[in-house]
Image (cartoon, rainbow, N blue to C red; front, side):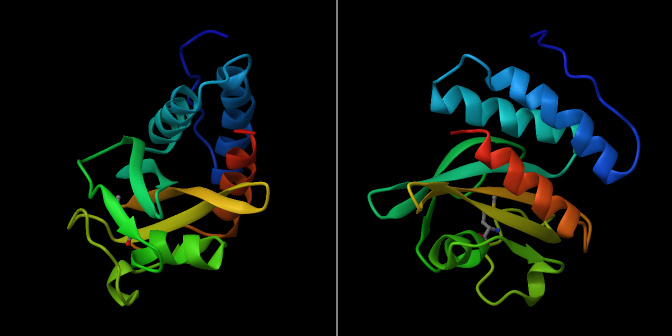
Length: 156
Ligand code: SME
């Protein structure tokens, strides 16, 4: 696969539909988890321009910062803490339209205004989360949930 991403302008659904086959191409034949997480974070950041896109992976009972694109971030998150730790604990996607209204939100960047966190599953267990932050309020909806949940299944 060519290493240049084709960036599509259009509505969100069209952008995801253009991006997903390209992500599949990037992952094809590559089994290294870090390489694949890194390319997914980069592809999402490049297409959508969000403030922060990255992964926290479960290690020794904590979420530990993995490959990401964006400003430096906190490295460890406990189960049930913040949006990421809550998504992990509840094993479900969380959409937060206004992070200031989410009790216990962990502000890695004061620029972050809204957030979506999608768990990664392996054998029914949460093994990590995809975290996306926007510098604008209310940036994530059911379209993001649907496509981001699809994208993380490509990691298997
Ligand atoms: N805001 C997240 C922490 C991670 S940073 O946004 C990159 C949270 O509340 O879990």
